[in-house]
Picture 1 (spheres, rainbow, N blue to C red):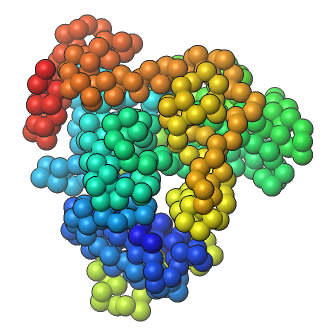
Picture 2: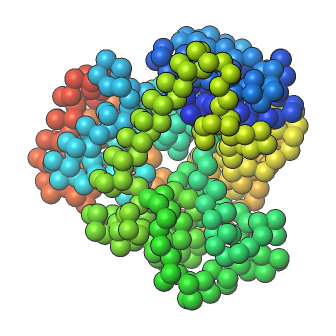
Picture 3: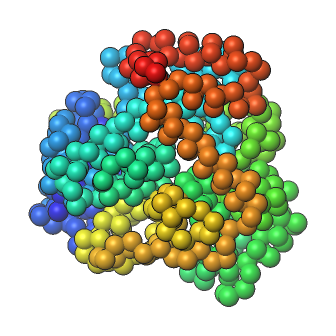
Length: 470
């Protein structure tokens, strides 16, 4: 078994996956090799040191290998997890800095939260000049190496934008790609608030990544939406946001439920129309006192917190070298203790495919008739059963409402198609047309000015050449 993690220098996510592998009986053996790959040597070394230490503390004999060579990570792999957020280290210490600069320019030209904050795709920290050029390019590079070096492997796309990247790879390469996201966990917040035992809930969610809806909701065989309606009538006025991420039962979520007829789940709540996003005051009205995470106050705080956590883990790796007796799982909350799993779907998927440990997951795969009215080859986030024979889609019952399809999903699908048209064509005019359709745009000159300034940034030289070649 060879499992490769691309972008392992992010440290935290890679360690969660290592922890899950180390605690999965069928995978926790000397024959399992986990390759950590990154281009940032310091971060890669830290991940390697901490992963070895963590696996040892969990009593697992899995072998950890580090490499800066993408071919080495890909060759002969069974599963390749792409969690990389590409950036140019000559200009920035991380991809967030690049996004922050581009967002600031967008706001200067009248695009609140930047040109990549788009209707039905407000979860836009990862989107980069509309086409997500670096992210799609990297995933395609991995996929084309897989065609030569690991043709039977699964590419487990984790880095955003999952929708655009998974669709692009399906169309433009031969790799066996599946998209992963943990936003579906939002259903458990709903169950908890309503006092429902999760084991007695019959539920489904379906849609597209960051656009999923609770289509089936039964409790002890009865329609549980009645319980939600009762909560809305009697208790929703008591709701208060506990953190910028706490939006699952926010006024925005309830408003979307009343319009669309089904409850939005996870990041979908953040991805509504401009009704919820015109400015910070509007965001606070719909998402509570923090205004959600996608605003000018909370997003910079998050980036800074992530940087501090990363730096803390880098220093921790240095401490481990000095003091090998340091106990990670007892002293650091980033490391789950034995018996605790991350909740990510990656390792259950691997174990199901490799060892036949049947599991129900929610994955981004081709529709193949699961949701009526959408193409078979469209990547959708669906309930599936995974076993040694592969991925088996559940039939989505009841069907998503017509309003979800017409007012949310089709506009989001269209936006994905615009992004991929820009990526494939390399035609700057496509970027212009996308922005011309943005309600924040007041003139064609505004569109040209913001794109000119963004594409003239030193770290965007490749991007500028790509989109000005036609």
